[in-house]
Image 1 (tube, each protein chain N blue to C red):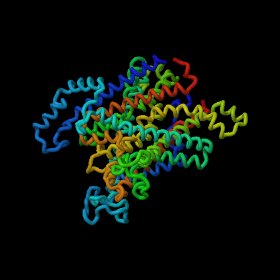
Image 2 (image 1 turned 180 degrees about the vertical axis):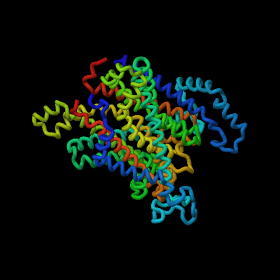
Image 3 (image 1 turned 120 degrees about the vertical axis):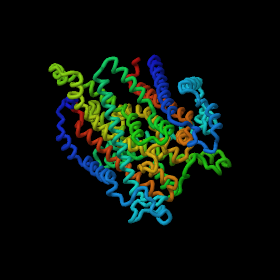
Image 4 (image 1 turned 90 degrees about the vertical axis):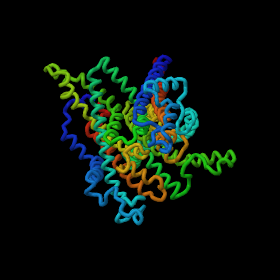
Length: 324
Length: 291
């Protein structure tokens, strides 16, 4: 087990370095740079621009820049954000907890709702209920994240102003609120972005779980249970679900990148101060260190996600539990 | 399972099976209703998508008979923009998907057919590529490479979307390599290239066709997202994504600008997803129980 884990981690490190290399050259080979007149204030003189390039090392040969960058990343330094004038690590450390808060709520709600929907469908398979839920899942599966977020805002923040339109706290009153009301304030701001992500992701979970349940149902032990007179409800919930959960547990690990993608759009639309918003905001300023950090952290999440999926699978599948 | 891989999937039979399924027909009808007006946008659109007929009197008009999808703050007709934008969005999605499936099929087929060290190295590279966070990489690259010409954008999107299909194709090729009809072709003296092109590739078409249908839907969503963020199709050329972006700043007041292109995306992507599922069913009827 330890050997397996070490091998997987070593593999993941190689992959992340490879992704970082590809991203570095693709980004840095682009014509112009973050201090070109088209990006920065055109009134700034060429001398000042040259000074900036010198200060950030952008005037050095590309291979040298690359070696310097990799060296600093291995020391845990992700560079200095041009646009925010802060260390990239600090920027991300501030934003990450906000993204994690949103993600954990959306993930929990999506799995609960998705699995519940799938069980409902499979118990009444072929019925109108089954078909309607399938149709609605497919609808959300086919909806762009950012558009759904915009429509949710139009409906529940403007048309029926039940929830705030964006941000994570009320910018005016939050600091003067007591501790309990601060939590209520954050909760109110969390509802719409979390709802958007849940609608999108529970559709994926439901589709996956339904297919997985239907795969298990023709198994012989299900036929045995049926022959013994076990009611369909108990068969689906107790006998089939246990085994049909395995692929869905894997989905949990694979969900990391999908949720990160969702976070980019949903955080942008709702101005949620998380990693996604940081990334989107660094587009206009061509903030190389921030963009690079986003790609690196994204690839770490993807590789970590698939590792987590593997480990969960091993933990939950008794057949794999005792293997090396 | 083996019965599915034998080379006897008649094209006509698949088509007939597809046409006998109601949702497949509905999906194709919907696609025709979206694709034809968009492809022939100059015939169907009543206005020039970039014309600003009257920036004072006709700006930001809600939907009406003259402008069924309303007008935007530049007095441009949103319906005409959605039609012309659809042309761009659909073309981008179709060509990028074509690039993806061509490259993905070739890579997977070569890996599966070569076997040995070549295969294991190719698969290891594929594992690495699969760990690239596609959206983040595309955002970073397009943020650095401003104003890329559209063909370059399409190629980059296409070249970052073939990894999943490669794995599937390689699996199929591996399964086919040991089949009797391949052995008999080899016994008749067919060379490696001939066996791969004439005997194996036609039989991996099923997952490729399904992946193509689902892929088009996926790329439509991806392009819309990138264009919404400002790193996709660039103004003044309309695309479904950047029209939504046009309306998003004043979404409360001018909801129609973002609403209609979004509906176009949802309807189209949904139709492609249904078509993909139905094609899978028609090409390989339920394997469950058949063993």
